[in-house]
Image (tube, rainbow, N blue to C red; front, side):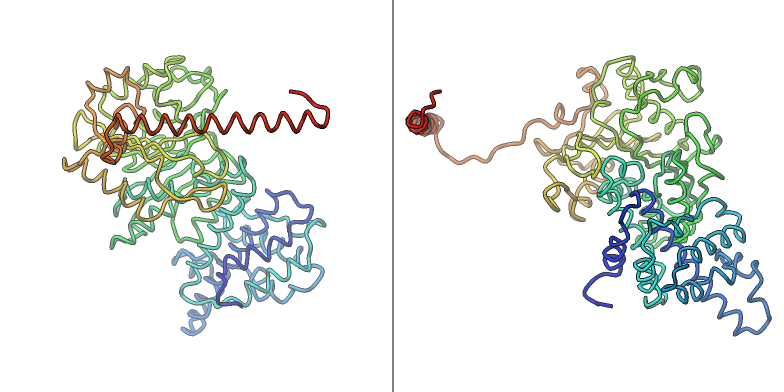
Length: 495
């Protein structure tokens, strides 16, 4: 294995050869399923060897694994069986059988694992080579992290490839990390995502707690996802990351079948579908969640916001992504709902994001931060971050770690009453000032225009110079126009 190439990159590059005629969504299942199977096999093997060394004969007892939050892997699903069949024509069927055996032995995985490896559209020679990559991997104490990052890396690559469809299961890390850094989840907290996708918010929340000397095992994770395949991805992602999560027994629509009705969460982080129409408002008009007004049929943005507020603990906080329209729309009662939420002093901060952070959409989006018990009563922080970040390639932008920390620091300063406002970038506004703006939350209305550097050139002199430069440009433009006319005339064309 080339040490200069990351394991996840090797897996992705090798797996890309599998593509062939198989649809992207099916191909995604193939890769994430293999990563998951390798992970649970490795965890099982390690515990199995410990039990054999103890000599008590418990190595084939499922309870001896479950008590350590390890999945019991039946004999015909163990990686040694998979690897031995890597270059046999029946490798696809062997993996499918392994997936079924694991589900049968572990009821929490029932109907979660993919079973499409025997498909005739899947090149079995290349599938065997991908199995070899996992087999030859150095499986040590860091293998969970390696497989976890590989899982996340592949999900990100699929999101980039699948475009709009990719946005259904993946929120860019820049956005997730920014939300987590600003909210700062702590030990023994309850984290909830009502449209959790593949679970990225949970992964980074656990990592944040751990990075700040906390125990990631102490956070309680609750999620819900309406798409069946995405829900399965999230279940596997949580298992690989060692995060115990209650994602419900099945995928379900959050508005019609709230799986966590009594939950009051400390932190809610979400990237709900933008501007979702026909979401079922006509059947939910008198729902208890619509405390600030009934959301319109043609847009669920304020249904998502109110659903989350409904699930907040007394000191709870929300960080979510919304399309910019929610900042200013007055249509169908949305302006009144926004006004009511603002007047109840719930909006703590608004961050306008740059374009191209998402793989799937190019429309401008904003981060909303909502708090039940704000430190700065009657005030809201506004940040215009549209110029932040850097272009990774021609289509995609990312925040640096410094960018994310800068935004988190600004929120921290605001909460502590030490914010230094910067023209064109950040400012705070009172509820009364927001009311004067018709309760519109567009950051540009509050941060103002960025101050320009003073070049010390007197205004009159600058106007004379710029006017002369403009006249010269017009002259050259006319000369070029005449030259083009002459050349076209010479070949019989007139304009």
